[in-house]
Length: 108
Image (cartoon, rainbow, N blue to C red; front, side, top):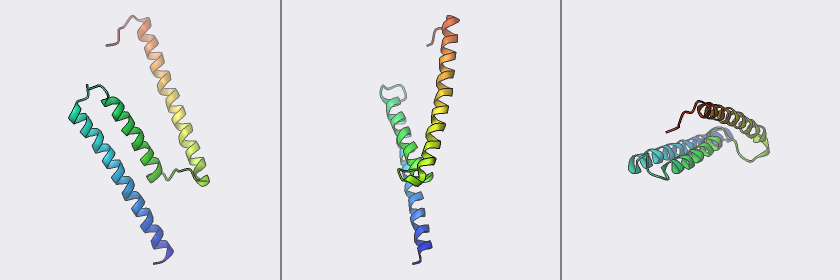
């Protein structure tokens, strides 16, 4: 086998592992929600942890972001984008919560 077909085979295998991992994690979330119900304590924690695992699988197998020096800039870009999104989301929740408090609205 030549080098190019070996690299192609390795990449295809990597994508299939990523797809299988993503599919397995997604099915696990649905199974937990179906089996225990969404109101059961701890289900949200399990869904959040499986979501973080899904994020790691997506970053490693599809975006090829790992700890190598060559992909350090990509990791910095993803982390900066995540920080900006968290600032936007937390700021929105803070402002809306403050508005609800000032208008004497009670959160259910």
